[in-house]
Image (cartoon, rainbow, N blue to C red):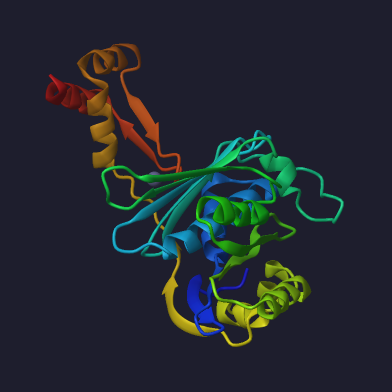
Length: 293
Ligand SMILES: [Zn+2]
């Protein structure tokens, strides 16, 4: 693995008529691979999803948050990713121990693991009374094209989304990252044709990252006149805590807690997002029960 910090750049091109994001998520994906012990195909599916989440998080501001659920009906089950505007990302996959034979292109069979019969759900907490919710059917299962479809249908933005994870021989993450190019109104047909040409002649995200390219260099490969507006660090961050788990136990109510104390004499709660385990012995559960009463 290359020991470079994950970073995201946001830029524009063609006089502001193209909005662009590119990110390296190698460290993030590696951290998730270790925490959840994902097998290569599951690593790629989870890595691609959190990479999209990181860039969609960068489209938010302040305390806004995004939650993405991919439910394609395939063997890995549900993929969940969350990100915020500060570059904090977390995620998990329901069945991490999924690895499939390579597809016809010799690549990790992400579509086979994700499945193609289901939906991508996007929930944005924008600090309003009701969160924004968008859902689109899964069209390819490879995820890049699925997020492209999401932007077209749910956000009425013509986009190109590239997502990639390269897994090494020892199952560790070699590189991961992606880009989102968004075409805004006002582009001429010639400009659109040129962007499409550049997209189709650009090697895969993983090939570019594996050559050591930085996110802005990836963007300039597709949009030569890219102007970088800002950049931010991307990192794994889970917001779970012992206090929050206590609150969850408390919300079960006195009856449930009494049953727990009587039957098990202890409790262990594992955070889905980071796999951290929180243990409570009998005395600690008794204390929570006293609060519940
Ligand atoms: Zn956690």
